[in-house]
Image 1 (cartoon, rainbow, N blue to C red):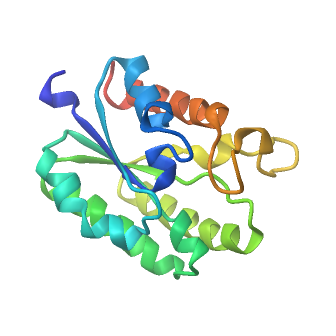
Image 2: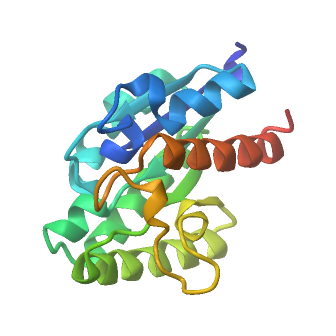
Length: 186
């Protein structure tokens, strides 16, 4: 793989691939389909603040061309204000840009706990607006997990109330493949 197509994915358990091994994560599946080695820096249980703390080591130090940033689910579960999550994601994106790394923002999948989903929805709105205003790429994992008619989460994509099952991770991988084919022109 050439340096111009080196990608790091930073996030929480949904990036890691929980409750499975990383070999079933959307990161691995997308990389395999594209013939790229996408570095999985998902850490189970991480909040956006914890992702930010390790951003230099896990992303900048890798010298990638692109970083996929997706977090916020654990923040919502612990009732962190959407503004704080938005600020953390913005800071990671802006840091990446300072180092010549193209940030790609992943919008988290729906959460099946209504109160947590409400908070996560606020974050999604903020980060989507930020990405649009700053001409950043967005991968909309959220919409792909909703039933078209009812706008409710498709339970057949979940292993539990928060994490995708193998089918869900394949859906996510498919979105990443399509996005990277457009963004990287491969």
